[in-house]
Length: 141
Image 1 (cartoon, rainbow, N blue to C red):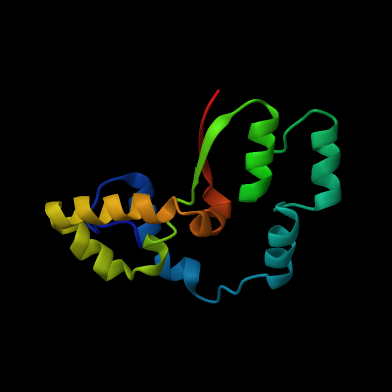
Image 2: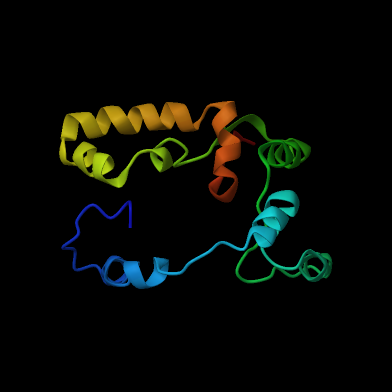
């Protein structure tokens, strides 16, 4: 919901999210055991089952593995990638209240400046890990 700036949108996915926000959040509590497992293994599903599927050459759906930045760099380098850049998109904006983001997005000049700064900030090595669940890599082959 935080990133839906037009609360009157007709977009069906955004509309569903807005219309069901309270319902989705009421009573929600995170499964901290699952959170710790995900962070330590990179797997959202049961590690032993997921690894077995991967070892057979298949890919579970939904894709359920998250690379740590150093792990992804090592894999890319092993296959000949050069000049690797990583980014954790959203690292900065996740810490900004939704109301403030809405104000920023309403001002074209401020929006450009903020997004440029986000690009720089989210690309810093100390932020790439914050993007573990949405890490982007760019490289030359």
